[in-house]
Image (cartoon, rainbow, N blue to C red; front, side):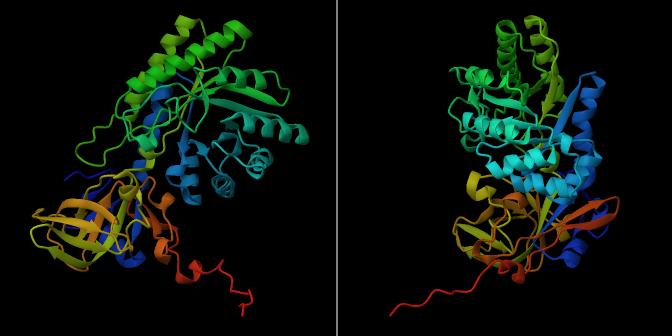
Length: 439
């Protein structure tokens, strides 16, 4: 059995996280429940930051908060001296409400609205990662109206394909994100912003995909982007201050996954950028990265209560839980794989094979197919590992199911980070019918 972070099995045979019994958490807060191991998030954060510091390289490690965002998560990121990557006005608003330092916030997105960009200016964020020509025109217009300067990065697609799922690969030429590095779009974007009095171009950004287990893709992308920086210096005298290499660092979901440690990704990036800087006679740029999943993914565990069971003779045995695709759509969306245990029987041998079904009214609502588990009974607590990224953040009210609660645990203590939605919450924005019925 692979345990993550501070997970242990106590004398009762129960799974514990952060020194807290998950069965007690399920009793106190109910299920479904997301439990976050904040000590593991801190460890992952330090793994990235410390490597840059030890190697003497100026850097920013920005939490890609689309993986999981709430006030407490942003405050935790601030405690660990992370910067922050937001991709919507809602994430930016939440970060500001959390008291996160605005000058360490970077704003992404391929279709930022005027209102979102105005909020970025009003809150004084540190940087906008510019994605397209339309956005350049909006930033110029807003900056001129406000007589305010904004720092930006240009997001480029370097033509590097990561070894990952097609739906989460974003560095290749055919992408909705960024300016193509090879067809002249990046050069045209550069010309439109480099001399604008209200824009400070810091450098370039790229992101080649997600759930990546090797460093070659990052190194190849870094080399290509550095070559463009070298060309702009030679042709226009522009010296880039920042190279943002994005995120996408993989985590272990199942035994087939073989992720690297944070320091391995970082050290290889640094070597590549140093080598390219020497070749191109460039000053070493500040390196920014954007880990999201790799900070919170395996720090999150979902707790469910097992309800009904069904046997299809000679086919499979089902157990159904009180959540499903409403709190974790990744298995249905990406065919994502997970592992689990019966948390109140953690020391028992895994003698049974079940397909873990959700409660949503969809045949495809299956969280794990053919999971090897302890013998399961109604009322048992299922703990599904590595749900900390893109679980709660992609949760929905499909079938009018309330979204779960979120609890943070550390050093034997626990606290509610997000309250469970109630049925009253589900109808709070609903309005009664006022149209007149026709004859």
